[in-house]
Length: 170
Image 1 (cartoon, rainbow, N blue to C red):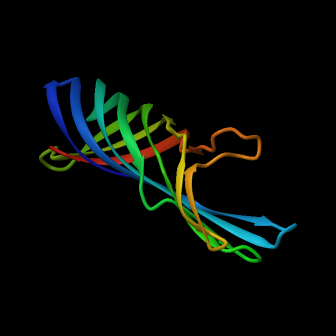
Image 2 (image 1 turned 30 degrees about the horizontal axis):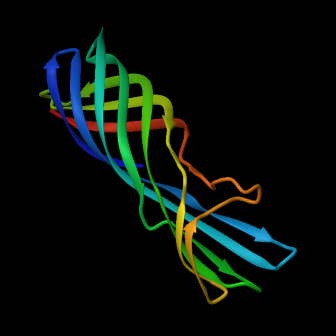
């Protein structure tokens, strides 16, 4: 995950900000030994979020931080490559809202206290569903909602624990 943003200080202990967030997952490879196919899932998303930081001074240039953010995200450059006895490249598309909550420490650094390092542990909730598909599979065009083997909507999940480190400039 890579985030770029700006904060507005409402008080020494409370900040509001805007983020541009880009996130991706390590490509997942799935083998279907019954058909001899290799599926490679590439998953990337971009979005904008609002954030709030509540800080509690601990002394010695250290703050305890409670962080929350919420935004809207869209899949980008997300597709499934199929190779083997079958062949295809299907692009996936979806947009959904998501949020994150975290707690951590901020260490104010520099001779002029001009920057800080924030280290936070938290949780992100972001699931993309329904997924629409477009592309070709075995030479046939594919379009519409992607379903799983049970007939329900397929989903891509970016939810889970989150450990982050942030450099903040003052």
